[in-house]
Image (cartoon, rainbow, N blue to C red; front, top):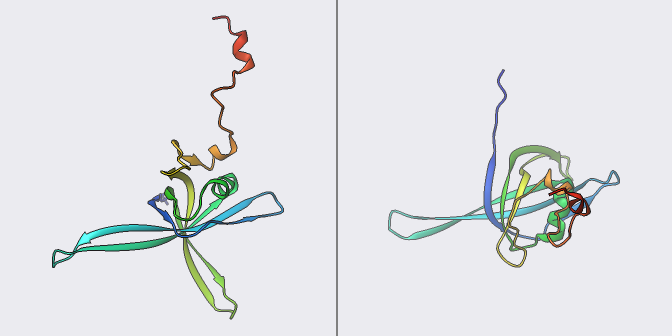
Length: 142
């Protein structure tokens, strides 16, 4: 059977500060909600605003980036996969939640501006400081 493929991309604003959990294993997870607003003109010609809320989950080093640089109200562009999971509530009833498991996050606008997307893969690699000269460059023959 052929493997399926899906990707979800949203652009919106955080509804609250991310909640971050750190595990004994060294792994981290951040969760937060993002409001995505859209508008349309109804049959009477009036503009109508509509907002959809998405639950977002970010794992690993990307969760640490979110913890450090993202807060309520920030504008973000997020890419990932939608997943539905189940859990039991306090009363023992089965509940379902659908979340966007983010693999890439762009911080948009404001003082926290980020020019390039931060991905799960990139979160493990520190950015190079342009003012620091690599010692190996001095040994180049040209």
